[in-house]
Image 1 (cartoon, rainbow over the protein chains, first blue to last red):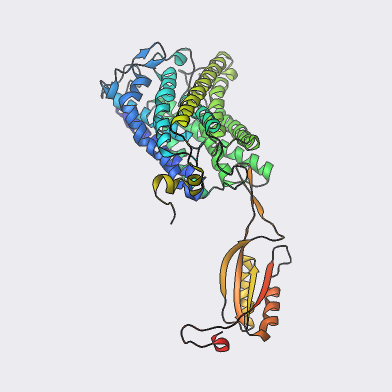
Image 2: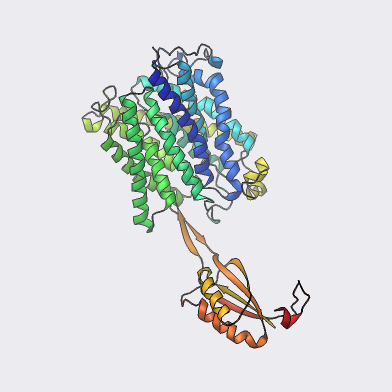
Length: 406
Length: 112
């Protein structure tokens, strides 16, 4: 039975999630130097095109199609064959399946876009496009099936991920770490100043991401119901407490609260609540945001000391945030909040935390190893890096023959 | 004729301009410049990564005067641009061979 309210809500949520990708483009572009602005924007924006194509033909079928051994969906839904306005019998049973398909498409789009922050300012466009498509097929689709697909083996084991802590944030974080190791740092890393060229642009991106996140997490209830309300509230509260905590940490440690710190804390809080949003109450969401503000702040600072050029902190914010949120679900989840959810450690049950840890381990290792192999093969065959001369001239001119500011 | 070049702190421009007006200096050219001397740079912090910014923003004022006005102008500049803190700037005095007003073709003293 199609519910008009649920359908309207998920269509609107899909639009909100789409908006996060251009939002992310601005969030990232503000943090790079003025010669790499359009190249950075393009790496996020183009995902709307190439991943949507991939999704419609094979991605949706691999992720949600009829299960093969818990590992992957088969390709019987190739090019959306049989995917109609009739609701699916397994997913989101009150909305047309086309609506579920397009909503999930938006998640597939933003995930590879998130990775681009790790190798900002130094990658050629053509091998980057190849990487993103191959990554979506070999990493995103399988992991999405394991956790959210009907019959997926991690989901069947009881691993929970409300809106993509594992599927989105841990996969992109693990891929980002692999990319940093394979591709290496930017020219002049540690010597030159890589100053953000426009923090106001990053703030606009932060606002769009936060706004879109209500669709990302709220919509993941897949119905306009109590769970959606729980997730919406938890999302906002974790974002705000993440922002507060990161700002406080910075104020205490370096003496000044920074706008980039406030924005980073908000995104850390939002990423961390993502897997847990529909399973935790408001006070737990605030705690999760506060923890995110501390741990992600420390992770990003550790990166600077360790000398990894994860340029825009994909690992420290999305990877660590998604991982932490996945585990904290096992601590803070409560059936009093969501009767169809689980009880976590604080509600007296330790077993969910164990499942979450297994899910986290499996997804991290799988996403890291496969991403590393894909990147290495493309690096050895096509060459991922810009030439030194082109890296100094910047992506905007060398890859796109444009200038952001003239 | 002499050219006086003064590097000053940007926020002192209004004070300097008023003081120079007060002693009858009718024109000047300014440009935004960057540099460092004893003041060195400053540090900016982004997500915990510290970047040392070597060059400080400064303003350069250029004024052409008769040789006998140099001392007055330099004294006025020192007085009006001074904060007493490191980084107040420098003043250079250079000889000028000739000056021509583009509109009229007037030269030297008449052209200043």
